[in-house]
Image (cartoon, rainbow, N blue to C red; front, side, top):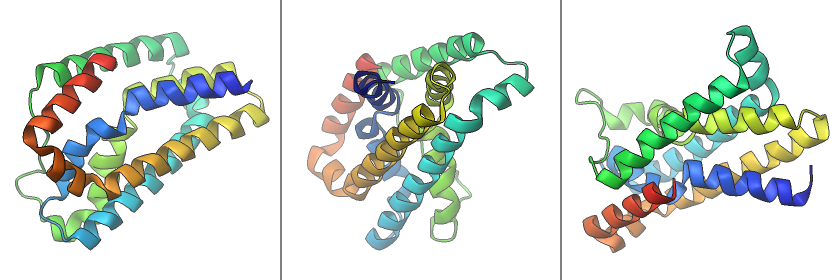
Length: 187
């Protein structure tokens, strides 16, 4: 695996996960929390993302094989998921909100993992992409390099989330909608 291959993987993963576009969802889920708790949610979410993506790099293809799912099937399903996600973002169907019965102060640890880390950031499209690339680059060295990119993406997303609330306030509702639609087109 060359540096160019890693750059393509990082670019693809960034386009699929698009941390700037998930800021709106992060802000929606954490708006009732104190700023210090929002930062903890961001960091816990980044950790959960890193663990999930590294696990997919190393065992994703084996798990899919046990389930009878092939990489082409996963790529097709992931492509459909990306299409629907992109169309939803472009159409502007709104940001997700927390469940009506959720108590954010007591559930922030769970919220950081589900729904913020998984499936918001590490969803079907990202999993399909990671499995497809890691199955084509199955040496331990390649998988360690892919894992490094995944951890880097998780760190980047964590940093974006730490600054999410001030940035969302600065962009305003219209700015967030424009940003989401632009990344929907890219996706």
